[in-house]
Image (cartoon, rainbow, N blue to C red; front, side):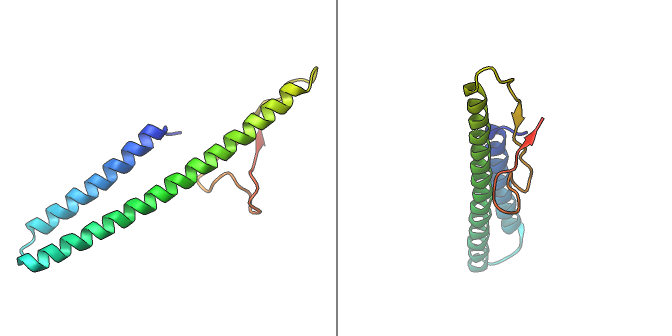
Length: 111
C-alpha cells in the first residue's frame, strides 16, 4: 500500500506535470495573444478542477482508512479486555471500492 507521502507526491507531480504540459502546448501553438490567454485560463480552470477531484478522492480514502483503523483498534481492545480468552487477530480489508459493504457498514475479514 502506498504511503501518505507517496500519494501526496504523486498528486503534486501529476498536477504540476499537467499544468506544465498544458502551458507548453499552448505556448507552442500558433495563436494570437487574446486566444492564447483564453486557452491558458481554461487550462488553469481544468487543472484546478482535476486537483480538487483528486483531493476529494484522497480525503475519502483517508477517512475510510481512519475508520478501518478504528474498527481494528476496537477489536484489539475488546480482545485485550477479555481475560483468559485467546487473542484473535483481526485485519480490516480496504479495496479500491472502499472498506464498506453494500449497506454502508465496514467490512472486516479475519486472517
